[in-house]
Length: 174
Image (cartoon, rainbow, N blue to C red; front, side, top):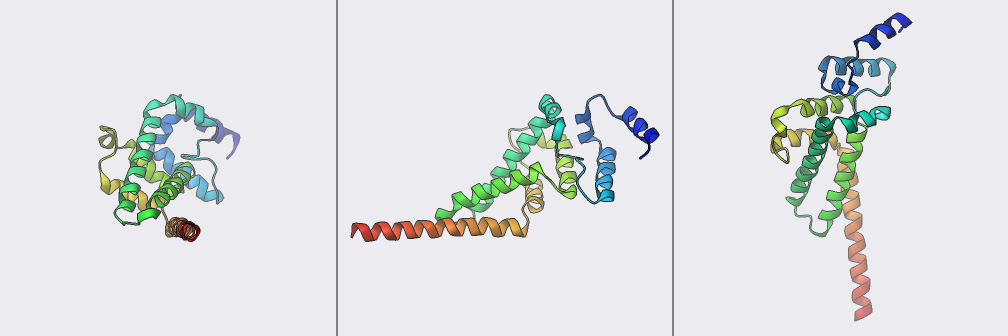
């Protein structure tokens, strides 16, 4: 990009950079720019120095918080249905940690889905997002098979530790 193109781009930016999060054309250009250089150049939800501006945009911040809470609730409901017993709590905790990691540093594909979800006014009329289909679709993108393997391994290890602890406690009391 030469100086003229840079100056032209600067003149076309909105007064509030957070408005770019809802601009699909800008998002597409940002993702293409990242792809062109083969890396993350800070487009999308990698807030970086714009975090202060995010804190001032209460609508987007509120929607992002609602989305995260709704995803956490949905993953809890999903894992609770699996009847994992004592391993449920740690499985949910690990899944929530993975979700937060992915929301902080989303892939370009995930970033697009998150931004589309944040821009969907119909989802944000209640305390939680009630459209479970959209939440499940996002969970499928957020939690990869590798993430589920990690969740399973952590839950299995926790259960193993509980069994060992109980076995030792039973021996000592006998």
